Length: 395
Length: 154
Ligand SMILES: Cc1cc2nc3c(=O)[nH]c(=O)nc-3n(C[C@H](O)[C@H](O)[C@H](O)COP(=O)(O)O)c2cc1C
Ligand code: SF4
Ligand code: FES
Image 1 (cartoon, helix red, strand yellow):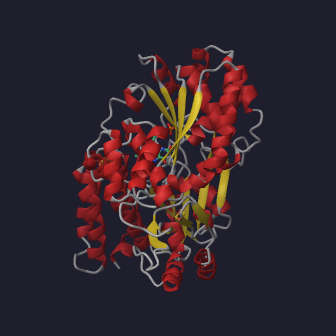
Image 2 (image 1 turned 30 degrees about the horizontal axis):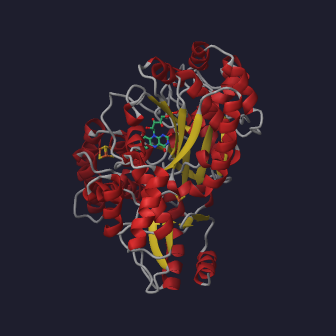
Image 3 (image 1 turned 90 degrees about the vertical axis):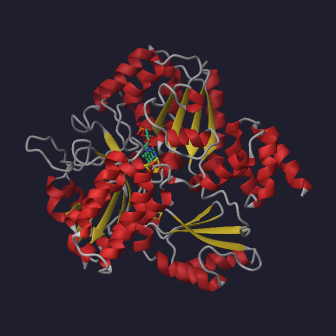
């Protein structure tokens, strides 16, 4: 069961680290050093580091790069996913604002390793205010790449207000000038991505971690985190919280330690991983590990205290999903509408409380029958909130 | 409007005439004109050799690509959970009262359109809103009214 701590599972104390936001002016030296290394050796080091994607799905980054490197074709692409739309997540914005060179260095590294000459930053429209600065740094970096003899050019593309475009195949559709409708996988982007060419899509923070690993080495990096969740990660902390903001923490901590540090003393529940993540009630804080062995998160941590109605929270999430569903497949399109109508009907007593069990079944069907991660994860929040706060949904 | 045709041509020269150029062209049209009407979309379709339905189908998918007339300033107030918890409803009412419009409407002078949107990535500083590309955070009803008034006077 997700979120349960196994007895023998390794955990870490809540520990602040400081790698991601260090000044990014030494990144080019890291790149220069790496360009002298063998490509396969870099891949092996990334795999050895245990780094998993920071966008949510948690695929082993080194393996992704390896697959793209081995994919047939002369033209390949690198895409940095800066669509950051998961409610409660705001760390990629901060990275791009404060240490963009660390991101672009990671993209260039990827270009070198997989043999790609072109990289794109896909920036959500909501972050367009960052564009002038990012473009001027890109231009500067493109010159530097040339000087280093690296044939790689960075470009920027924009989203236009669609959460689903953060899903990698929808993102690619969007870059190709289409509706952002997720595709069936396989084929995966590493073999057929942008313009049907092998493409690596990684999250902003993932590229940053690649640059860091190249700088400090996998050995040092592996000192952080647990077997299943190596390294450190940024957490976007918001809600009923004593100090909202962005924190860089070692992976593998217990949710109870997190709540002690960030809660307001009256924490009733934490939504881990955004609207598509899981709601953990107080009684499970000390059995829940934040990481791939427990509840993984792209960084969104929303804290609710006892003044909050979990019905209201769930209602807000369902409205979000109903609006953001691309509508392409029936389980998700109709499912989101029915879940929303369903809890309204239970609340207003038009339906009996046992109807909630029907809705939970529907949410579970959506998990297996939906085409992409959006529809598949609506049930995460739905089931975890209904299971743990049933009375609040009914009364 | 002949100058729409010219603008579309210019943008196609700038971004290219491939399918991948469609979104960058529509996005810059939005920057220039705030919305793309049927005529503009037909122009884009002609220029990129696509069907008008393809262009409309793509444009209408994206919430930031307006296909109906909007005001010079599009206000997008975040309505997702954290901003909601922090008082977005009162901010919304203050804006509605100041502009005398409801969500989804445009003022008679075509200066403002009021919309709500999903998480803007500023939850720790919510409530948050965008006015065109500009971000405003830690809103209170009073602060929101001041901001709107500064735009009224622009
Ligand atoms: C609905 C949906 C939205 C997503 N949004 C994002 C996003 O905003 N940023 C992101 O990096 N990944 C997002 N993802 C995950 C991507 O599909 C993809 O797994 C990720 O970009 C891969 O990069 P990583 O391995 O570095 O995490 C989303 C997935 C889904 C299903
Ligand atoms: S699950 Fe939802 S968002 Fe994903 S493809 Fe189906 S309808 Fe679209
Ligand atoms: S919930 Fe409003 S900015 Fe995130």
